[in-house]
Amino acid sequence: MFCGQDQDGSGYRTRMHLAEIIGLLGMPPVEFLKSGLRSRNWFEDDGTWNAGIEILQDATLEKSEERLEEGENKDMFMRFMRGMLQWRPEDRKTVKELLDDPWLNRKV
Image (cartoon, rainbow, N blue to C red):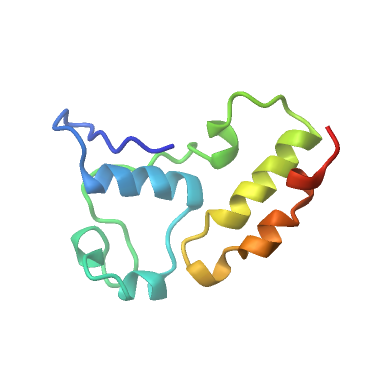
């Protein structure tokens, strides 16, 4: 899902990995960043990105999924994925909620 290969050709870099995640999930909440031990390496105190590379604005989760055809199945899958892919753990769906998700339980 994320490769983290830096634009400068230097290989894997955390800043690129974070830029890819932000492109898909949006900016992390400031209170979440304040709890991070290394957040100041890439973010200002107000949550502004300062890692020296741009975040791709059109890199959404929906655009990253290329194998599913547009329609109800893809929409359901995206809702399922969004239930897991949240910055704050308390915002993520529980295992039970995921197991009960309509996308997993639909008749194929």
